[in-house]
Amino acid sequence: MTQRIRIYQQGNPAVLQYETFTLEKPARGQVSLRHEAIGVNFADTLFRDGAFKVPLPFGMGVEAAGVVEAVGPDVSNLKAGDRVGYFFAPGAYADRRVIDASALIKLPADISSEQAAGLMSKGLTAWALVKQVHALQAGETVVVHGASGGVGTLLARWAKSIGATVIATVGSAEKARIVEGWGLDTVLRSDEPELADRIKAANGGSGVDVVFDLVGRQTLDASIQALRDGADLVHVGNASGAATPDTTLLASRAIRYIQPSTPQYVNAENQNAAASEVFERFREGALGPLELSRYRLEEAALAHQAIATRKHTGSILLIP
Image 1 (cartoon, rainbow, N blue to C red):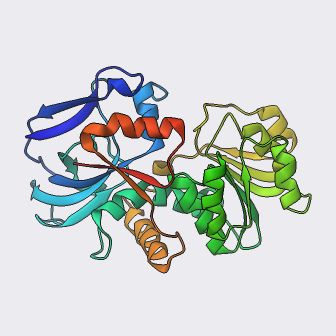
Image 2 (cartoon, rainbow, N blue to C red):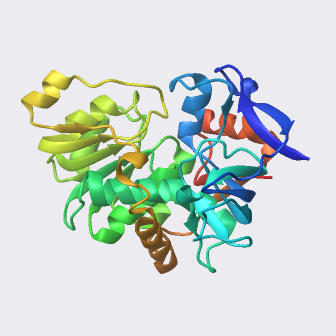
């Protein structure tokens, strides 16, 4: 039996419907893929809850890794048995699927499907942030809000490996204890009073060069206050709820405000090279050990609840 999760309306995790379906044959330029691990990302919750409007019914999930089972006409770069992953193609919450071959990245032999599904989307997002959105330089001071999450974990460690001074914020004392063991420069609680002052104090009283804000409502004002004039505010996510900055204030201080999405910076032309760099940094240990939390495919609602409560660290996987 082939299983998938779709939504027929947007809302809370209860709208995730686990259902049986018949897998079609791959058409021209497509392959059929058996998933071994499926990545769960914060963006998935936005597709589900209505923050992102999507046509219904909608196949949930954008990231997975597995094995090619069959190829359609005009597919010359892949064959049955190849191990592949992808980072942004809706319909990933399924044990099998048909997908365009152009979306797939071949996996190295030393990268497992679970590692790929835990690394691809989040690692490529981190790559885009430090290489493209803000070309991070050694000696700069950065803030990573939400440093214990999937993207934040990789981003903070990558920034430190470049030679930046990294100030990380997290949402609980338990997460702070974990992140303090990573060798970052400063770890703060995101719910502390006068957070911007604490950040500046950690930077010798000066504003920082860039803030990567994955938290949103709880931290965005502090992010602006903690930045030096002419710095970058990179608003990546809204784990605590959506927020909108005062753009007039940002303009008056020459602060560049960016709301990037990974597909803006990673595409069919550069995805293989970018993924290779992510895997190489992982092999080197620059991204740290990969923390994975696993749920069965049919437990997707529990995985979404874990994201909503911000109780997890690292990456979440669904295992078919």
